[in-house]
Image (cartoon, rainbow, N blue to C red; front, side, top):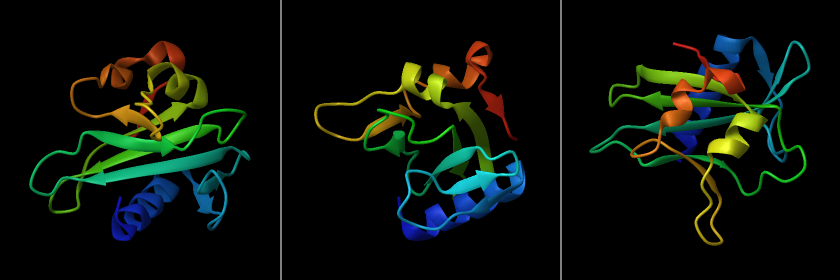
Length: 123
């Protein structure tokens, strides 16, 4: 994810969920008013839709409480955004080989409908 996409996703998510940015060096990017640690993953549709959101190097321990994913259209308007509790991310993520954890966009986005695990549409 480009720096510009990440910065836009963090700013959008902070406004959407009422959170403040915490800076770099943590496994999460925002802290909610309720104290929740929020990781943000953003993708931008350029020539084609991206395949996945990056959910972090590892989901071991408690790296964050919620993941907010934001998919931007080519004109930087929001196609969709969701908040997922860590349990939902753990259930739906893919980790091919030694690569980082991924939440699929194409061909495996059933996580978007998983209300039983607390997935919440933000748009």
